Image 1 (tube, rainbow, N blue to C red):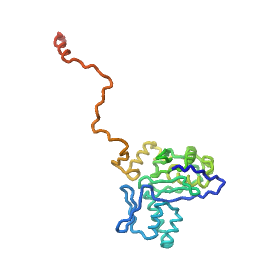
Image 2: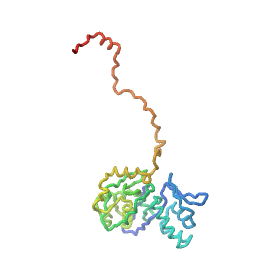
Image 3: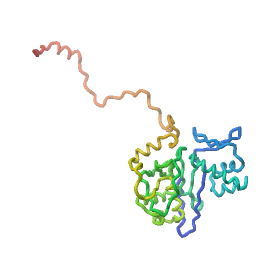
Image 4: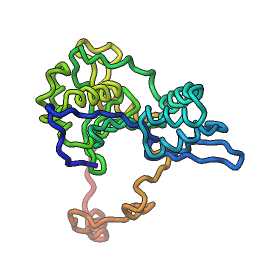
Length: 287
């Protein structure tokens, strides 16, 4: 949702954090056999029988937690040796489309990266903010349930902008620019926060390195690639087949289209009179 809270000025020391959490439409369940599984619609990801450390981490992810907090919980439960298991589980959940990433400044959320489906493309290289960046020509900014949402079919994620001021940053990147030059696009936002947002957008393929476009992308139009990417099972939201996502919005259309009154009323001829007239007329000789 839109926070509407004032952004910290660049002269203030802003505390920028990143929070990990389960995607909003997922929940963690434990079977009678003690197996923990993540469930979203028809998709199910068994995690196995977890020990105290990972059980506590999954519970913390349901509410959202910073990675440092997860490490602390894990270490307290099973010692430092369990941190490796935590990192492996987080990597698996991220690659499986189960985690959301939220960037916050002084405790207020700025943007959240949410997964679409559960088939993630290969991890992009870390964002290089020293190079000029530009908005991808496949990026799409729109409203969704009162939240600004920006996404690109080049990746199976989307980013929610919790503060509308960030739309200025997205618009500014229509032209190439470096991170150090983008401070004026969101007045009052600390440079550290701008860099974190740029990394989030870069990792979602919404922002790319300025330069020539790869040939494989240059052959696609925006509409074609968006339809291609979001209509594939595993890279879509809301299931597949007959999802009935608009059920209850309106009454179903009738199976047979009802007749409608003619747009122009035409005179009805007297067939008997026409037949009699033709019968009394002399036949034409075409020989």
